Amino acid sequence: MQRKRTQPRLIQAMLDIWTLPDLRRKILFTLGILVVFRFLTQVPLPGVNLEALQGFFGEQGFFQMIDLFSGGAMSRFSIVATGIFPYITSSIIMQLLVPVIPRLQAIAQEGELGRHRINRITHLLTVPLAAIQGYSMLTLFRTQGLTIEPLGHLTIASIVTAMVAGTIFLVWLGELITERGVGNGISIIIFGGIVASLPEIIGRAFIAAQDPEGLTVFIILSLATLVLIVIFVEAHRRIPVQYARSTIRSGRMYRQSGSTYIPLRVNTAGMIPIIFALAIMQLPGMIASFLMNPPGQDPNFWNTIRNLFDSTKGAPEGLLYQGFYFALVIGFAYFYTMVIFEQMNLPQTLQQQSGFIPGVRPGKTTADYLNKVIKRITFGGALFLATVAILPFIVKEVTGVTVLVVQSTAMLIAVGVALDTMKQLEAQLTMRRYEGFLK
Image 1: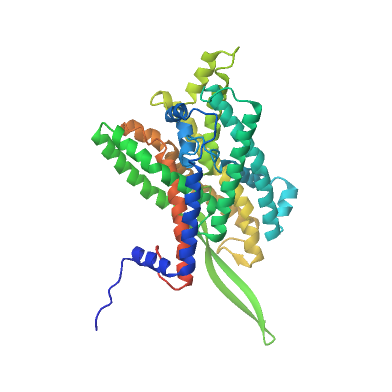
Image 2 (image 1 turned 135 degrees about the horizontal axis):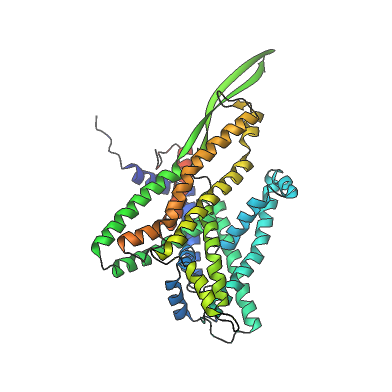
């Protein structure tokens, strides 16, 4: 009997996907949306000197980070320069307000209708946030001498309106991907921007590298970072749970039991702590940049403030910045994890479903036990996120390669989105009795 020859699992899974019309259609739809997104990043708005703007972004570490996430849209001052960051900010604000405001908490508990209403409020909040971000960006460019003056009030209003429209259009494209494509649409848009920008950045790194040994060490550290990111993104603590239910059959009561587990993720907060910490760390420097040039202000004072919060400084000047940044990421990781964990309300859910943790009494004792476990594992996740946040600074000092200063954070987002998308494809293949990627 002839032995059947099999393809490698990943290749076979890709072939299986393309043989399924619905999955093939979803993937092609997602790729088409990403092509539209890349086209929009190339459509510039008027009023800004693009050559001067490119030089400005080459000197500012924080704006390099934002530009990387937008796929270069900000450095080109395109119609989608603000990206989907106003929507992300709006979503974060709503996540923080729902547990605090009783009215929003009641809406969130209305099931599918409540989620739609919360989503609608999030969309409405995105509009003023996008307008504020667009106007602030244009004002910053004007204070840095990057605009082509004079810019009238009508021109400024038109530019800001176009940027708001670009943000809302990107959010709509992301929701189309979620509905008809593969993966979470908003995450896929960010992933597309990162992937589109990385080849250019990596190429500049190889061209600018004058120390081959330093570049070799950089590549090794990058690969090690990739492995650690995959490990920590997937890491979780399994909490065993048993269920006991009573059923009545033929007039008799029977008790049935089953067991499962609750996966508590080590990195529950995801990228949110790094985003919060970056915003706080860069806020003083951005305010100083706004106030350096206006008449009547002391430029030396504001220049000192901006230099103090400059993320591109090396050792020893940058040690204070990186240390404070490290501490902020850990603090926000604990804060956001506890907010998300409180919203999950696991003890009450277990009690309603007749579930219990072996050896732990239901109610307050279960809540205390789960809080203790989540705090312990969050410590490891927080240290991981904080290390990833300052890793570019460490790599730059060790290897001397200064071009890829935002590589580790971008890699964390890209790996997380790629894994989530592969899991969705895996689930689709499993439902159709095909062998997937990850088994």
